[in-house]
Image 1 (cartoon, rainbow, N blue to C red):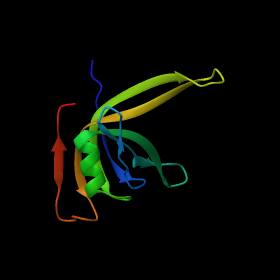
Image 2 (cartoon, rainbow, N blue to C red):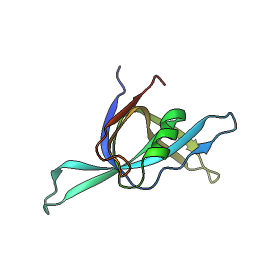
Image 3 (cartoon, helix red, strand yellow):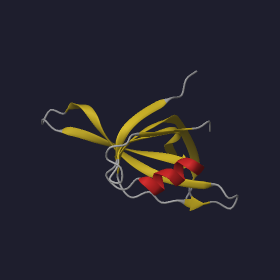
Image 4 (cartoon, helix red, strand yellow):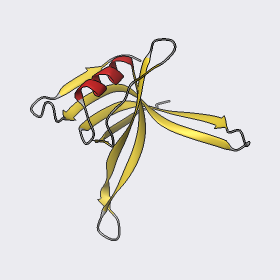
Length: 119
């Protein structure tokens, strides 16, 4: 079975890092990804996809990227289900980053940098 996602999109907001109790760093970012085709009214629709970046990915994206930057993310889909206090069930779908490519950043327009690691 294969669980792989490849996205290219723009950061919706500046990345922020959270350091967990166990010392690991995590960042949740949202990518705005335009669809390839136009709708019936002639406009492109955009999907907003949540991605989770761990440790070095979180640190590097926080350091080198900001809102509006174009990045590529290769990763896997992870779905978690939980129950709220009122008994309703919720489902969260995230893309867990396994590699990141900086395609266009404000800080380095001429450079393309790829960061990869086993997760």
